[in-house]
Image (cartoon, rainbow, N blue to C red):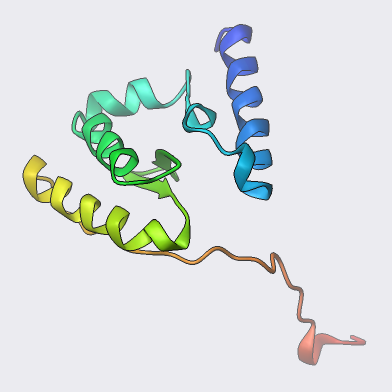
Length: 121
């Protein structure tokens, strides 16, 4: 059970994040704020807020937890990616957290269904 106000807050932020990913001019740091997941996760990974702050300080337009585990993501322009990745590596070292920072490319195509050999069966 979660409070309706917190669930609505998260859904609103989700809409803002999607809009920001579609139009970079709409992307703001606060679109990744969360009232349901980040607090409990931070209890298990207390270095996360500092790491996220370092990503944003290095040029990430937004940063948040990513996925169900201990992954974090910094969303940035391609030109800022090397600095954001380097800041992530440095922050991990300084916080004593084992891990690595990688640069990922966005999937601009989306889901593709290839029926291949199954066509017509």
